[in-house]
Image 1 (cartoon, rainbow, N blue to C red):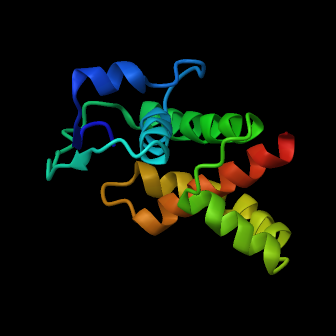
Image 2: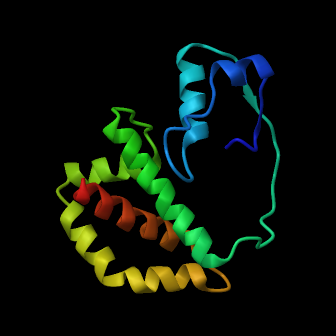
Length: 141
């Protein structure tokens, strides 16, 4: 996450964020992978942040979906980021469970969205929400 690292100005110029995608998501991970591949040194800092509810829930939901769209756009470019979503989708495909899980999530998407809008959202259900959209958007490709 770009709020959790220190980087020299020279390196940020050498490894800028990928600005070819619209919206939100994964630019910092791409930059980090490029730097790691070329053995550029960097380190993460302990920089806890607190979300103060500055974004309305519909904006947060749209940003989450947009980040998944960007993840798929990177895949189309041949850039595989090895995220948890991608790893889990590979396992579902390997064990031939992808369509079953996709159908289950599709039937429960309303409940998953209600979870995000609740006062105490469950992060596992949010992960399921993201998985649903990842699988749905990959099918559209």
